[in-house]
Image (cartoon, rainbow, N blue to C red; front, side):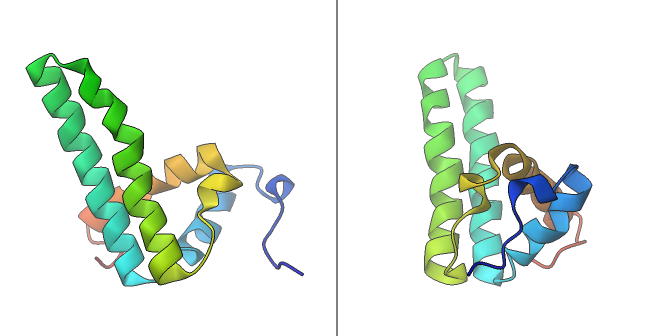
Length: 106
């Protein structure tokens, strides 16, 4: 029996984020999330600068690819994206900011 909360358990992102962080305890997983998010920003910028919007098609592959490798290889869990897609996407960027500012250990 899973001890994971159900979707109805999270009324707000503030309630979800501590759960999200628990799913990202492994440092290598967090690092892969960080690298994926950084690459997403760089590819997004390059797409705008170059005017080649086809690069935007790479964004989900890069962002989710790095994150999912972190979960399957290092965390040994299912990414929160599968159950909580919007909150998980928000969590990715909040965790990225928190790692960038030193609130979460890189």
